[in-house]
Image 1: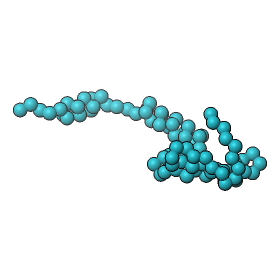
Image 2 (image 1 turned 180 degrees about the horizontal axis):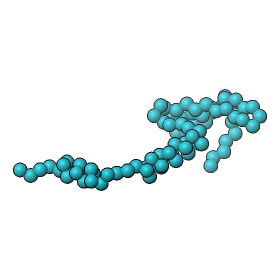
Image 3 (image 1 turned 180 degrees about the vertical axis):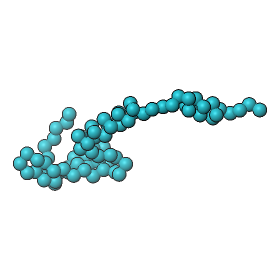
Length: 81
């Protein structure tokens, strides 16, 4: 882990297009701003972990009807004339 010291209004760059700025410091809280392209998802860690857990639950609970899958594969194969 890289640890840097920054003051208010100072920033760090991640790659060429993500900038993290220290906006405010009050007591034990630091307010940061993140300037990133819209296609880069930015979440608080606890939100990210919730999303990952929900995605994992969705994968594990998805029901696949193998009969329907087999028919779909069979029907998608080209027929010999």
